[in-house]
Image (cartoon, rainbow, N blue to C red):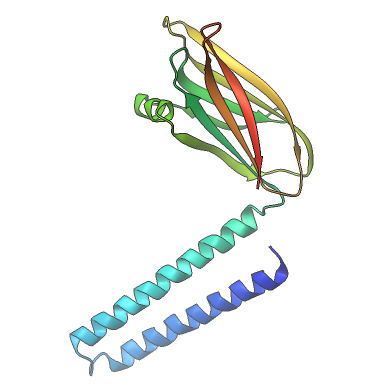
Length: 184
C-alpha cells in the first residue's frame, strides 16, 4: 500500500471519528427536545457510521499486517477422498511449523464435497522457500497412513497462494498430494 492511499484512509477515519463525536454531542444537547423517532433515526445513522468505520479499519489493518508484497496463503482441498480419509494436516515453511489442523467428520465431508479451507495466512520475505505438508488419515481399508509433500517455491513481489490438494490416484488406489501455486 502506498503512502497516498494510507494517508487518504487515515483522513477518512479521522473524518468519521469527528462525525461520530459531533453526532454524539448533538444527541446529548438535543435529547430533551427531540422525539423518540428522531433519536432512533440518529442512533441508526450513528450505528451505520460506526459499522463503516469498522470496515475501513479492518481493511487498513489487513493492508498493514499482510501487505501484498509479502503475503502468502495456504489452502487445503480434497478430490473425492475414496482412498484417503483426512484426519489432520501439518504445514511447515523453512522447517518451522506454521499451521496445523485436526478435522472433524463434518469438515472432512465438506472438503470432499468441493470445499477449500484457508489453512494459513502470513508473511514471507522475498526469495526461495521450502514448504512441507504432512497429511495424516486412514486409507480405504482403515489403516493409519501419512502422505507428505515437499515443495520449493519462489516468493516474489506479489501475493502468493498455494493449494495443497489430496487427489485420488486410480492407477495405484492411493491418494497423492498435488501442489498448485497462484500469484495474484
